[in-house]
Length: 280
Image (cartoon, rainbow, N blue to C red):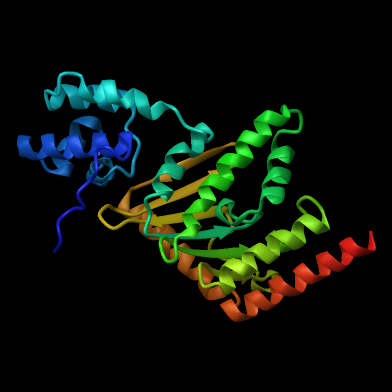
């Protein structure tokens, strides 16, 4: 079995903290589970810190400095993690997303952020914050488009999205915006960069009726699930819970249209939106 991936401490604050944590933990002869006990976290969580896929919190840094006799190293460097261009509830998930080898997502209401066009993202953020200054909306849109740069690589990460039919029929930004947004999804899928399926209304009740679900897997760390509701989100690392969410996603995939039929439906609706826009 291959050993954990070697982190480059210069690549990010999380990588720096992860490399130092792994070094000091190994020197102390502590397993991930043993170190997790006094922090009241799981061994999986320590593994995520080791690999740089989870954000270290200040109280955890303080405890690690004490346990590993790090002379304040973790607290000092933890400060650099506080700055993020993303909302607080999503910052850690966005950082983990950037390191994932595979991202699987069920989207019940909106096109997933990684797949959004600028116009679609702008319409979404304006709906969320109708009285926000334009520069605030511009910053949010820029951060979302920057996230989408993950898809400029030819193969990594694997992105597999299941879109509820409601995503395709909800008129975010009007017909022109929707036509462009759906054609962007088609381009990514037909360019073999992502896998897309549609969960049709005809599927009825399904395993993810409670809301959006994002699953992230990594080369050298346990998988994560991200659950989001209005204005907040939760990153889940408990292996048993993640396994349940993985099963829910697999059941949704089983109820969805095939990729080929999904693209046919998306294309048909994109053409309908484009035709409607021409009539306006």
